[in-house]
Image (cartoon, rainbow, N blue to C red):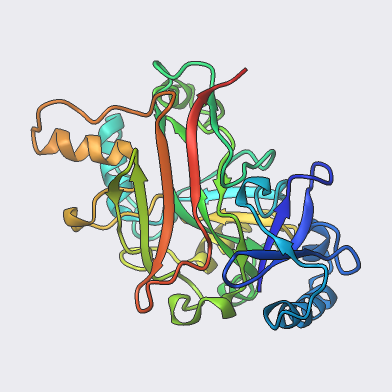
Length: 329
């Protein structure tokens, strides 16, 4: 099934069940008024939602309405926690070089991860709001993400894998020129990592077929910047740490509540022909190859689209993220 949240209904939005073709939806207040409620009561809510999804697909749901992605917020507007990993080693190496940082000695054994803003999370059509588009270094980062149920402290890989409830796409927005000064303080990101945005819907694993192997999503994650394809790497290629490993890592010293979001980190393949899922990575490649000039970061009016393409069928079960950089009021 596919789930989304309308902006209307308060800070947690209003949960809706969405048709497979993403054209129709139905609110489900009698099952769960919000995504948070559905995740907190998953054992009882999920079977009822599945039953209703069958009726929706059969055209037997009288309450269904046409769905406009613009009315959607993030599938989970307020997450219990938000962790973003960096599971693609090619991206880590290029990004670290760009900052002049050394590579961790345990790069292949221990995930990199930061804890980001868990609210407010942005919808698929919301603007990337900035106060200064010239000096902040606005960048997109195309990623995949999962939403979990409850995870116990010290969870092993089996428990972590069984906690995955939903899969979605993620634009982990970064302000590149604000990050170095923050990291120099030795205390992590704040200003350099504003709220992230997500695909219109989050989907259960059964909707993904062979594109989901229980640990990774397989297929192209396509980034189109101002109408030109910027990158189309395969999510399932060279992802050093699968989602169970990332979840288990996040739970080492704490329990994770239902509604925790875990991101994959910027999808990146070593094959240069697949392009890059963020501007910083392309700039680093240009530097290595001694290209004249550097690709500019995003400015007000620039537009980024993120979509997925199933490796076997070409299907995109998530819908797309489509955002424009805009000066905040």
